[in-house]
Amino acid sequence: MLPPHFRLRQSEEISRVRQQGRRWQHPLLTLYVYTQPQEPVSVSRFAFAVGRHIGSAPRRNRTRRRVREIVRRHLGQLRPGFDCLFVARPATTTAEHAELERAVVQLLARGGVLVDEPAALGSEGSRL
Image (cartoon, rainbow, N blue to C red; front, side):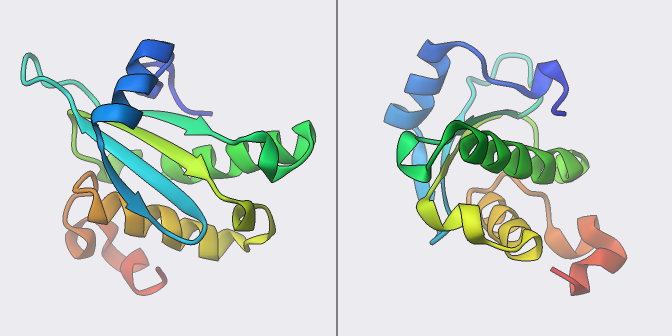
C-alpha cells in the first residue's frame, strides 16, 4: 500500500492536477503531472482514477491496486515536488504485470518525475 504522505486525497487537488497539469498518454494509462509550488519541497503525491468503463467494481479495484503497487515499488526513484494522477484505460485490465510496469515507468520518465533511469534502476534497468 502507498504510504499516506504519498497520496493525493482532496478532490480539489486531484481536479487541479487534471486541469492544470501536463498530460502524457500510453495505450494502458494516462498520466497527469502538476508541479507543486516551490515552497518546502515535499514528496511526490499520487492519485489513481479507474472509471466505470473499465468494468465491475472488483475489476476496477484490482486495476487500481496493480498500478498503485507498481508506483509504490518505484518510490525511491522519484523526484519530490510533483502531484500525479494515473487514469486507467480499458487495456489496463488485460495487460501483463511487466507490460503495465513498463508503461508506468515510461510515463513517469516522460513526465520528469522519475530520476535518471540507468543510475536509479541499477541492475534492474536491463529488465525494464
